[in-house]
Picture (cartoon, rainbow, N blue to C red):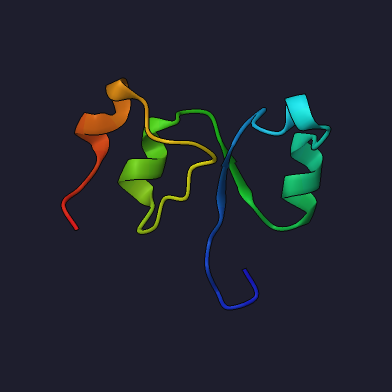
Length: 62
């Protein structure tokens, strides 16, 4: 974010580990509700774990 990048975080993603949405917002992240939006809006997707089978079709070549 300091380099001008936009960071997208799925709303509620940190709840199980003690990171509320407000923490991500305070850090400058944009919260989104639709996980598919990462693959549409993002140039680089860094998931916490491997893509799920229902996400395979969302991946772009390269």
